[in-house]
Image (cartoon, rainbow, N blue to C red; front, side, top):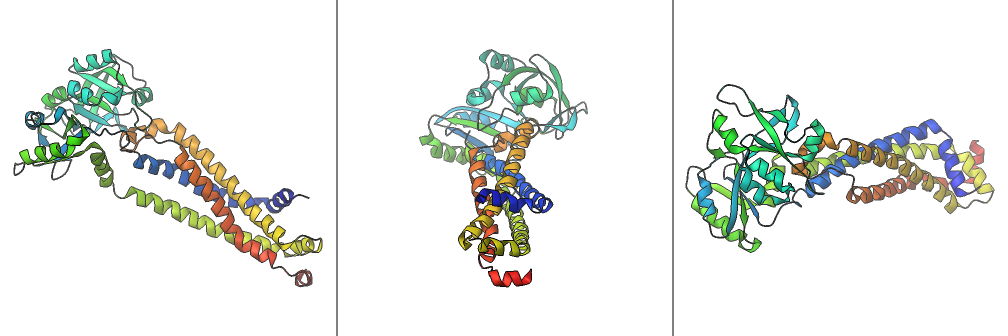
Length: 387
């Protein structure tokens, strides 16, 4: 019988135990796949940022507003090519569980600066010229079945209108496409339409969006903007777009460390479970191993067979975890897509796959070392006396 046949025979000796061990490994790799994709999206969140775009926010915190009047002074700074502004809307569609990543923006200047939104020009013009227009990411449009020209209600869990309601009726004027590193999920309404109706904090914005003439002048422009508003009632902090996105992620806590802790705990637990189970399995097969040695099997070959069992078990459970994780990430993208503009597009990528294969190899090898060593040390005469 070949070594592979002996490996399969060993795993099939107690199929229920083997299934439980494979299931434990499956759960660990399923957790790794989903959280690993999330980790990769965090690391690539700034990939879609432009080197010539800056974000100007309140020095206290980017959630504090800034006066809209700052725009003219920012536009006059040498090295600034274009400037716009945006305000977090905190939106949802019909029910709060239908979360929308919504912003109120100045349509013309904002879409000029963010030309990478990939908006057809005729639709961009329709959005710019429409007071109650809405710019929608394709993923969100497909999620809710929205079409161009459709009127929909966009509600806010932050803002109220002067009439007491929290809903702004809007008409979909443009649909944009995302890129590999940034999803098409956010929606944008006309700031003027939003501001004239809200009940408080009028003529303020969340942050200004600045485009410089060259990355070489970024530092000079940053210092000039912040110097203009030093000692004012709303001092500013200007950073690159990539730094602004990183600061937003940091507000959520050290997510990378949390992910590492969860996946590490899962793999440590599986390591102990599988290792202990395989040690017990080898102990149960002491007599079989003695017979194999009597028939001429070398200790090295027996050790390789035992390690082969743990490796095969690791790759079966881990492979299933990767497969189901891929299905969840692919099928759940529409649901999770609402968060992807901050974290990138959640996807099953080589950055998730290759480390997973390495973990399978390490898990299978480490859990097989002790039982393989025990099997290699089995004394034939002592083993037969115990039978």
